[in-house]
Image 1 (cartoon, helix red, strand yellow):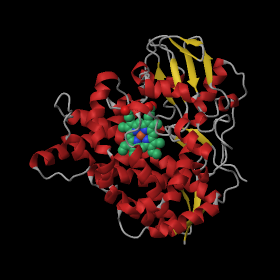
Image 2 (spheres, rainbow, N blue to C red):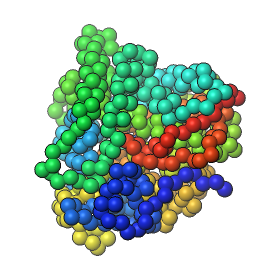
Image 3 (cartoon, rainbow, N blue to C red):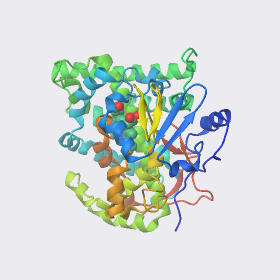
Image 4 (cartoon, rainbow, N blue to C red):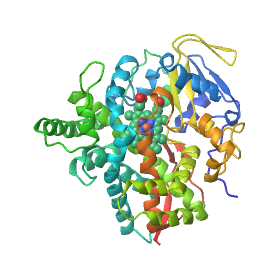
Length: 450
Ligand code: HEM
């Protein structure tokens, strides 16, 4: 049976400088293979200590049981702050809690259902775009980015990606990402605090342009809300929700920060997952055929169709296991801790790695195999509870998880309903961690009408 691509691991022993060099290239291949078997690993360097926790009990302790004691490390935001300001992704403590109280209601189950029409329209539009290139080989990550950005604009602001401002934001984002390729390095290899943080000038300029565009959208929406003419979408919901504890709402500036993160967190991740899912379908044509058959149920825009896309959901879950778009997360200890009888000092970095947990050799049956049926097995169900965190878990769980689990299978099925896809390159794609897990040099798939 063919195995989905997994990046090579580094040798067990390397110097700090070698590690940093590898790390700059890619955090996935910079890690040793033993992390797929370890419950915990300690990285000691002259400047800092960091601990990767890979044991379900420890992951639960950090994310679920005592999240307040393990806030997000400040360093994670270093590369993102010019763009995201004070957004919910970067804040901690009371500010973060207040922001979640206002945001979360917009993503509750029933609400997400209300966005289904907008998602359906985006799926139709994605299928039309592919129709225009049918018979050709296309770089699928740029197609899925386009589709996922469309989903965000339609659900958040009721505008399609063709809208001038939406398109400008999308284009600017590409520039931003190119100017900011190694986003997370500071989180893992913290620079001394005295070292100046030099953002490249083009990164700052690009962030400023994106924020100006988002400000335009947000101000217009604020005016529409005041005039009583605002559409009932996610932006309106968030901007009209009052914090039950303080009674206040987001002002325009705060909303700009949040929109920036919705756009970033909501489209990069979904685009990554969908691209890998399509690649896997090209590699496993039996599954592709099963999903295409199941997708025949998709005729009209009706939320009930989601309950018929069970296989698609299992494939999407399996994709998120093998290629979690957010491969690692970082927290910081606020007091001395003891992990597996080892003392962990205050202000240590704690790294949680969906990437390694999802392929843990002591937990999963055949961890590197693509097997969507595993979710029906005892091992799959058990690991699904204990060792599967593509959306993180606990208080800081991704608010868009429910949304993404509709969007992903919906788009996947809609595409496979009409198109057969195949991978005809000599070499398999190599997963690397950019902002999310992407293929090192894109994924080219041949698209043919069914
Ligand atoms: C397949 C798609 C997605 C995946 C795998 C994903 C994954 C994640 C993960 C792992 C985190 C936690 C990061 C951390 O703690 O360091 C997160 C946070 C977040 N996600 Fe998602 N996400 C997805 C889609 C979305 C969508 C569609 C939205 C919004 C529309 C969204 C909005 C957010 C926000 C606002 C946060 C910050 C939450 C907080 O820190 O309190 N995500 N996501």
